[in-house]
Structures are given as C-alpha cells and as structure tokens.
Image (cartoon, rainbow, N blue to C red; front, top):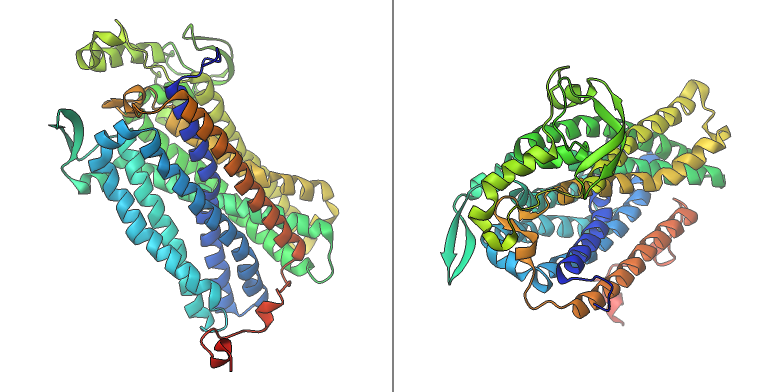
Length: 487
C-alpha cells in the first residue's frame, strides 16, 4: 500500500502482537499481585499485625487497577479472532472454544464475584474470612491462566483431536478434552508463567516502596520498609524459581519444537559435541548463517542435556527435516519447491537472552536490597543509588515477560497451529490493508491511553500514601438503609 510494503498478513500479525503484548503487561502482574496481597492479608489474619492489613489494602488498590485494565485489553484481544483471523476460528473453533468458554463462565466468574466481595467488606467479615475472598480471587486468576494456556498449548503441541472435512472445509474436531487439558506443553508453561507473575508483583512492590522511602514522608517509613523487604523476598525467590521453571519448559521445547530452541540459541549448523553456548553473535537471517560468536565451551550441552556432552541440531538441518515432513506433499507446489520453516532468529536469540538476563538482574538487586535492609544493619535508606535502581527496576519484569512471550509465539513461525495450519492460511479473507491500518492506529492510541491511565493512577496512589482515605469512605454508608432513599 502506497509503496510502504504493507500487507494484510503483516498488519494482521502486528495487530495481534500489539494487543497480545499489551494485554500481557497486565495479566501476569494482576495474577501475581492477587497472590501476594492474599499472603499479606493472611499474615494479618494470623499475626494481627496492623501493618499487613494496611499493606493488603494499599497494594490491593494497585491490583484492582491492573485487573480492570487487563479485562479491557483482554476483550479487545478476543475481537482479533473475528476481525482478522476468521479462517483460524473456523479451523480451530471446536478446540479453542471449549477452554475459552470455561475460562469465561467459571474462572472469570469466580474472580469477578469474589473481588467485588473483597473490595467492599473490609469491616463486615472477620480477618480470616475476608482473606478467603482474596484467596478465591487469586485462585480464579490462576484458573483463567490455565484455560487460556490450554488453548495456546494446543497451538504449540496439538493433542486430543482429529482432522475432519465439514462443508468443504478442513477443520479440527475435538476428540478428547482430557487430552487437551493434559497437554504436557500446558503443564510446563503454567508454572513458568505463574512464578514469573509472582516475581513481577514482588519487583513492583519493592520498586514502589523504594520510591516511598526516597520521599521520606512522615509516618510512612515503617509501612514502606516492611513492604520493601516483603517485595524483595518475593522477587528473589520468584527469580530463582523462574530460572528452574524455565529450564523445565525448555526440556519440552526440545521435544516439540526443536527449531524454536535452535533459534533461541542462534544455531544454524549442528554444533560439535560438546556444544558451546553462544553469548553473542551476528546473525544473517536471510543467508541462514551466524558469525562473530563469543562462546563458552560445553555450557550449551549442560543447559540442554544437563551433562557436559551432546550436540544440538541446527536450524538448517531441522528445516530440511520439516520440509520432508510437511513440505509440498501437504501444502502443494503453490508454496514453492522448498518451504521456509525458519523463525525470526534475531528476535528469538536476543529475546531469550534479555529474558534470562533480567532474571539474574532481579536476583542481584533483590539480594543487595535484602542485605542492606537486614535488622542488625539496616542502611538501605542511605543507599539512595540502590533505592533508585529498585524504583527504575519496576519496568524490568514487564520487559522480561514480553521477551518470554516473543519466544513462545514467534518461535512457532510459520505455524499458527503447529504442523497443521500456517499463519497465512488463518487470515480473514475479508480483511483489507486500509481497515487493518486504521484499526492498528486506533488500537495503539487506545492502548497508550489505557497504559497512561494505569501509570497515572498508580503514581497517584503512591503519592497519596497508605493512610490516605477518600472523604466518602469515612462515612460507611449502608446502601440498603432507609435513609439512602430519602425520608
């Protein structure tokens, strides 16, 4: 279009990537915040330490903001399937519809009901029973993640289906819902996502608390110091477990999608035995080769096979194998003599390293924060450089989460359902470049507005502090009292 090289497939992919990434800013954050707020309130219910009640209420406000924005962006994301991916919906609907329906009717119902009860009943339940409400909300958010990931995991590793022809169209027919839920891909991805979500919440709490300590507002020091150490511990443990869960998921990737794994390591030619790990390299994606590698001997074999021997298959060899399995015998000669199964190696290579580096950065700074805030030598308030780093670090886990999602989704290219349906086959035939360009601009502006609102309200909440109360909140009005309807 207008010589800009815009295509329907390219714009549709960009729009889905934009909506998914923006939605994914808030999903892990709200899942993690719900969980850590539930722990805060549970500590209050057990210890009766008032600071934990204040923490649960204050950080609960941030959780509610992320929850609200996550709902709006999730609705927009689901519009994508009807707007730009109708062929995908027709092909995949029999499988995709079931987990999404359960997510909406069960998981979202649980979280939306109990979050409302939790918000408005702080003084109407005993502490233990009120904590149950936020735990039910947290469980609901995690159940939502399970059903969404069940649908996505089918796209990564299809199970429990058969291919049928209905109305002249080839489509997937669900044969075993149990196999879809038991998909090994799902139960490797889910722990990684949940732990990363909890880590994200811990980093945000620590970062916002660091800003609170830098402000030095009278009467807030104990609150923000307690919140800081709480967030640092959550972030530290979360970062450690995320590395373990990431390795757990990688082992499944090796079985199901060896091309994705090879791309994350920038390997075009099969490595020697033992395989060195490449720290950085120059990638020629068009020429399918890499150069100027900086390597550490034997480390890739150790990371891949948990031993110091073993080679790793390269993308060039895997591409030939995929052509033999899925090439023209399946898609016909109209797609050329040889199909290109290479994913965007540059994106995957650097996204994987950014994601991994961020986990270690969080480990280092959270350890330093805990070291300088320990009881017998509490000097954290004098380490302004560290408080500023922790504050800036609020954004770090969001970058890491997005990088991880890039690896998951870009690594499946050119498939939208691995081995069964390509991206180019899935686009709506009615989509046009003009309509996609307009909706891309519209969605971008909407997302920028929503993101700005979220940041602004979070900043306002921080500046108001943990002991701020709205004027109306002091009145404790009963909406069912006769006075509410006049005399």
